[in-house]
Image 1 (cartoon, rainbow, N blue to C red):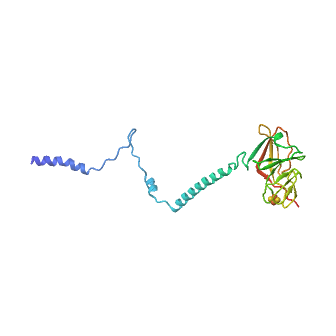
Image 2: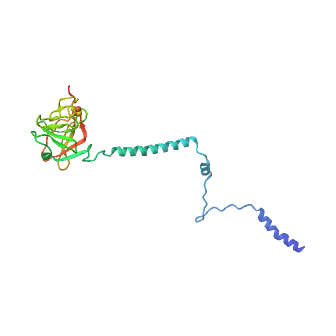
Image 3: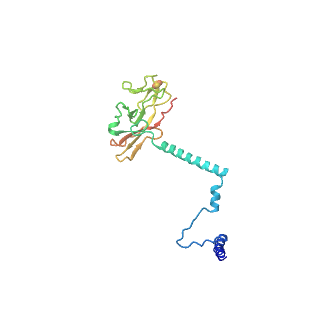
Amino acid sequence: MAEAQATAASAAPAKAAAVKPAAAKPAAGHGDAVNIGPSAAELAMVQAPMTRREFLNYAFLGSLGIFLVVFGGAFFVFALPRFGAGEFGGVFDLGLAGDAIPGTEDAPKASTAARSWVSNTDQGVVALYNVCVHLGCLYGWEPITNRFECPCHGSKYEKDGTYIAGPAPRSLDRFVIRFTDANGTVLAETNAQGDPLEIPSPNALMIVDTGKIIQGKAHG
Ligand code: FES
């Protein structure tokens, strides 16, 4: 009997422990580890499916980003100079004006690289594009007649490129000339009409800009 009572007495605390409700967790104190899990709102955001509007917004922003990258790249490539110095379509440094330009009584000087004739008259100097404006043949200087003549269909031009005769529809085209000092400061430059340019000094540097062509005047 006494043994049964002892067994019952030892079982009682175990039962009490089994039914005892869980004690509330103590508030975290300074230095205690705190488990910070996602809040209910965060869980809802993670689990919520993307709406159609959100998808369209993301698609729009993605497309905009791609467009800006492609457009920016194209703009960068376009902004680069298309021709380097000494390359036809770019600028040619012909050296000192006193050396590069013939006298007013002399025959025009050919510059093969710049595809031009440097021709000097009492009105000034011009750089003529060496291609005939009729159908694109290369014309040449005829010292006997003192003019330019095209071998293909016989168009003729004055020393400054002005049309004289033949099937060509206009005078010869000209490139812009720039004279600079040794520091690169521009001393004189061909105007928009392509008028002959006065030589500021025989020591000026002469540059022919084959990227800037001025069409000859139509005749008739
Ligand atoms: S191409 Fe020069 S006259 Fe025809």
